[in-house]
Length: 184
Picture: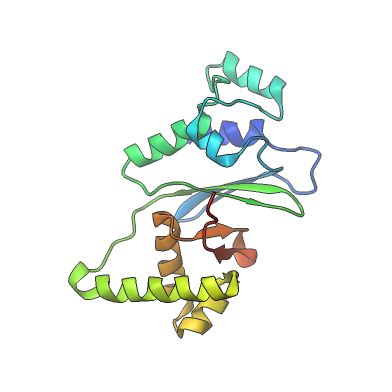
């Protein structure tokens, strides 16, 4: 958590239109800062690339032994979170205004017995994939309407699909949309 907050502070664009926001809910901790990634997200997750937006602040944190400027911040956050038995953190980037959001899930979702929900969940996931393949991207309400599901069940299915890497979420709150990942 300390690494995530330091990373958020060091990489915020303090000249941007939005402020830095840390929001804790029973489900997650969400850290959002103005500004986009300065390096490719996949490279940042792999580690080894350091390009802090606020180098002086990064130096101050390193003097109190928080952060190393070795490009290991995001891998440490992800590894630490998973070592605690928590789901993979989710990183999203939105533009206009530029904003980076790190969502740290606080609990694993309790799964219903697989015999009852496995097949049904798989069918819902396939329906979401088909819908997103035809639409490109969609918000939770649009997916819910297309699949004739309630909003809470749709959110549950979409969150599971994001955690599995089947779909990608972009934006936050009501502006959050889901799409299929692009092939690189």
